[in-house]
Every structure is written in structure tokens, then in C-alpha cells.
Length: 464
Image (cartoon, rainbow, N blue to C red; front, side, top):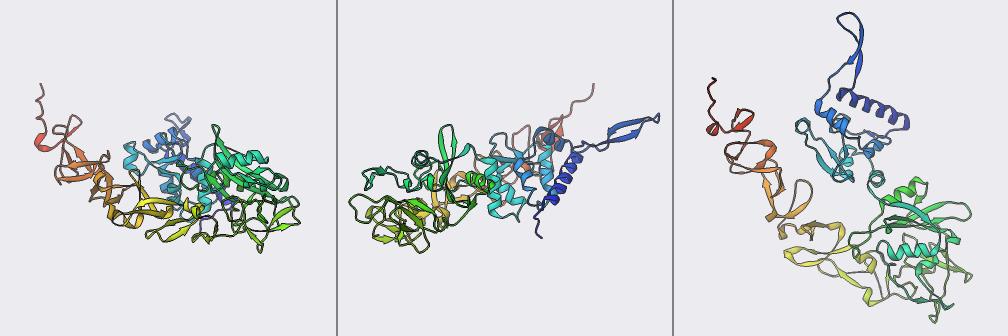
């Protein structure tokens, strides 16, 4: 059943949800009469002590709250008892109480916001989930700049792309220009830029039709921790733009204009960036402008800032490759040729039989600071941990009762003396005398609040 909510349904559900939370927390009061018949105001339900602790201590996670505006959770009772909130150690992650036992033990589980939302809102489309995550996790201020120097600076000093390098492309008028000079603000171009502490974290080109005022964008770029790797989508900027009513498209609108700069001493060549999106074809209009056209005579898919005759085409995106230095061989057999822009999407990994080669980032996993081909993890003794991470099997312990791997230094596991193997601590108890762990299958004795193995329990002193 679809659990999408309209505005009124969302309001009613939200009110009901938080009223229920107040009841579970014991924050409910009513009038009663005392032994003298006087009306008094008293607590009507005691609630759960551990839940009240979380309810008093932490604000309900705003991203989960925002999700109520569009979708109903799959099991709102379970979601309520988990009382998700921002992790105190990492505000970009979510902490929650997994079950009653962990609530009483004051033990919370921490995970990513996206993973948590997906578990409770399975019907929510990926793009809506990404937008909510972006609005509640990413840092930095966003502004839209409409002057060319600042736009070029955001390209040069921001997230990495094929246009992030110094170009010495001399135009016919003698000026040297960056290819982004064609995105003249007077023709409707601007750029959304996300900045924190002076560092450009993300950028996204925006087009505004000068006649109709229609606004759109095609591609955003987010700074990667490793500037040598490919710049991914900046979810924060895209959520910001969509909130302003700016549409995301697969390509720029037909007839959108760009500045035309003929190159010096190069025949009919002209200045041209790699145009993002599906529409890279352009026509030259009266030697004054370039215009986006689905059937345009020229294709702006070169990374050297000019249009020309290609040597070959990229096997991933079909872009023209003009220079032998821009040809990269990737794949397990190193038999696929890609352009520099697509090569940014590949990572050097350990793969079949421990050999190394380049694989697309969609098919890799990271373990202990190294990258591996996901199809050949066994060849490299890489295992998936219970929390979704990966590590070498030498650094992990398999817990049979949980049918999962845990880091060998995890504080969630212990060596049980009775099974002579590692177990989850939550399924075991610790002998105060010997320091040995035992599973719950072994009986224990409690003396003065301490837990002992029956063989190690101290004798009770006689009362004087």
C-alpha cells in the first residue's frame, strides 16, 4: 500500500505520532479526586522510564520529522520507540534505541541518516530521500553568483572536473579565456556555489531564460575528500535549487545561448567547454552566439576547451577524444577506452587473484584504506562487517550466533568460556571472580549485586 501523505494527512499523522510519544514518556496528566473529594491534577500514566530519558534528553530527528510531510513510516510504533535523534558524536548521523533491552541499558545504535530513513520509509523514492538527507546533513552556505569571474573561480578552485585546470586558450581577439567564459551571465547563466570557511565545497551551473524567466540546472559537483577522484552530485545544492522552484533537467533547453569566441589561428575552431547533460550539440548563430540545438552542427564534448575532429570516442559516454594523452584504458582486461571525465569515475583496485586495475566506482568497496573489486572480495580475503563496512578477514571475527562478521577489537563481542568461541556480549554475562565470559545458557549466581559462575561464587558470611 502506498503511504504517500497529502498535507492534511501529514498534519493529522504528525499530531497523532507526537501525542503517542507523550503518552509513552509518561507526560500525560488528568483530573482526579483525592480522599477528601477534591479535584487534583495528577499523572495519568507512568510511561517507560528509559523512553522518557531519551524523550527529555534528545530532540526528535528533524529529517525524520520532515519525512512525515510526504510519507508514512512502515511501522510508526517501532519508529516512535526508537526515538531517532542526531548522534552526539556526529550530528550528520542518527542515533536510535534499537529495542527495549537496549533502552534499559541506555545503549543507542548509530547509523547514517540515509540508511535509517530507507529502513523506515521503503516506499519513499530515492530522489526524495536524497533531498531530505541533503537538507539535514551537509554543511556550508549556498549562494547564487551571476558574475563570470566568480563563476570561473568556483570551477577552478572548487570540486574537480574536466574543466578544473588552467587553460591558455587564445581567442581571435587576442584574449586568453577559460572555456566557462561562454556562460555569460548577460545571456542568462549563473552558478549556485556552496562555501564553508572560504572553501568552495560545491557548484552547479544555472540557466534562466531571459524571456520567460524559466530556471533550470543539469549537473552539480561536490568536492571529494580526495581531489584526484571524481566529483559526485552535490545533494545539498540540488535540494536548495529545487526548493527555489528551479527544475533539474537532463540537458539544457533548446536555443539557450552561449557566447561565441572564435579561436586565434585555428580555422573554424571556437572556445567551448564540455557541456554537461544530454544536449551538447550547438550551432553558431550569425557569428555572434552559440545556441543549444538537438541537431546542432558541432558537439561540445571536448575537454581541452575547443571544438575539433576527434581521434576516437569514449566508450562510456560517447564523448569525442582529441588527444592521445586523454585516452585511458580501464576494466579488468584494460580493454575499454574512456575520456578523462569518465576516467575520474574509475578507481585503481585489487581484484581477481589480487591483480590491480581500474574499475568503475559503482563496483568497488573500501576496506582498511584500500579499494577492491566487489566481484573478487574473496580473492583478497575481504569480508563484510555487520554494520555494512568491509575489512580484511585477519581484522575480523565471525560470530556464528549472529551469522555476521565483527571487527576483532569490537566492544560488542567477547570470548565465551563455555562455547570456546566468540559471542555477542549482549548474549553473555561476565563472572566477577574469574573475569571469564559465559553465554546465557550457563547459569550464574548473584552475590551482593555481582554475577559469578557457580564454581567461583563466594560463600555467604553468617549473620552476626
